[in-house]
Length: 241
Image 1 (spheres, rainbow, N blue to C red):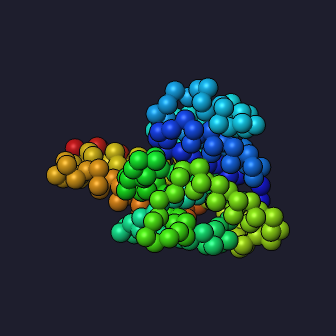
Image 2: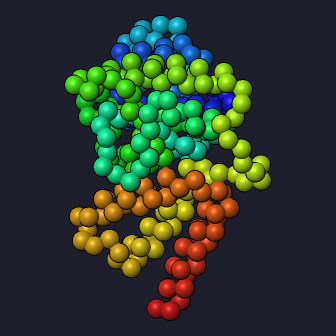
Image 3: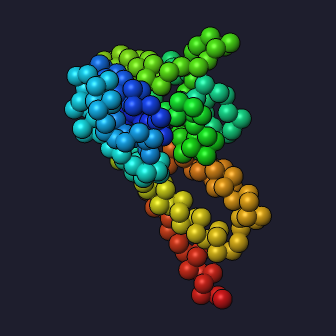
């Protein structure tokens, strides 16, 4: 288990001060990886650097992407933070449930924008949603406060030597990139047969498909098999036209 396996992903952060404070919180607990998705402020800027105080190295080594999917290539397990319980077929966990996560894998913690949090579409990329226990009558937490609570808790878990569970060393979990590549093959085949009807329901149907595949703990071998199945189906259909 290593701090290097943990990434903190800020989706469309709006305030420079919060970005800087998040970088500071990450360094407080010896983590190193900050990822930003389409930040509203110019990144980096003087206000971000000033708020980060001694964590300017976190800012300078951070990754900046224009969409969420690109940021997940090297993530095995994505945990989305949300103050709201989602009526979706996805595993909802509490802070203490992080004890069950295998931190030998590449873990990403996803945080939504200050104004609107995470949409169901963004949640659909996640393996789990995580709620931080708060006053039920006032659940709103500042972005950097949410991050520092999780960073402190995960930091304490990483000090535990024993792994939470064992699995054959020959079995390698599929990366988000491998799953997305397989899913794209599936979607392309479905597009060819005009599966997504009516068209206005396509975004919701794609969201549900991602929910199905991302919550499954697929191995890289299983992902390759499914990719082969989807590729063969497409080839077979084109040959019979």
